[in-house]
Length: 222
Image 1 (cartoon, rainbow, N blue to C red):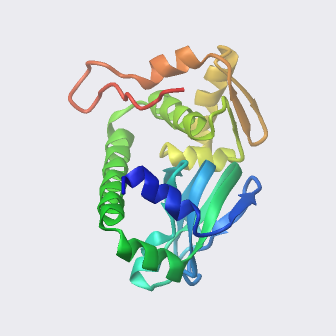
Image 2 (cartoon, helix red, strand yellow; image 1 turned 90 degrees about the vertical axis):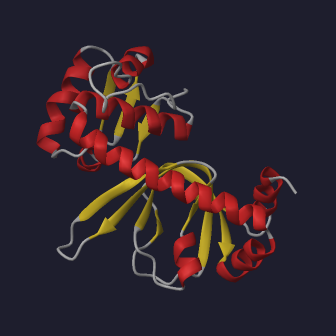
């Protein structure tokens, strides 16, 4: 059976649930009684630290599994997952998910490949934080969210959360957002950013030639 067919079969193993913007879909520390298959929208993944703060781990988009590592390990969930804008996800009971995965070698291989891709994305994000200017990192984050949600309106993130996603404080983010707003690239309101000039944002996100660490990022296809 083709991998795409396996993912379709996986979608049929549980009910699909709607989540409102900023709903906590999975909570760090809870038992992994289910796995979510995100079918629409984007989510924010963050680790709660011992001092009560949160550390941004990444955004995830459609056709991503959430909570599968807890299902495989039998341990409590190790991160919070929050809806960025309205989301939909198939809720897969852990026992049913594990039974299905054990029957499908091709799906296991695909899950391993996706985990490698996730690790690569995390490593790339770390290198971007060190090498790229703030306006480039901001453009990439906004385009990624727009791609995940299939919309030029990015809703559901506080300014503090957006700042975390690009590795700066809220105070440092403010002038970068203001410059894009004043130039007409973005329109902003509380927990809402609307991309007005997507081509300008794309040009900011694509850094060509200027060092080995700086390259064109080709996955922003809106």
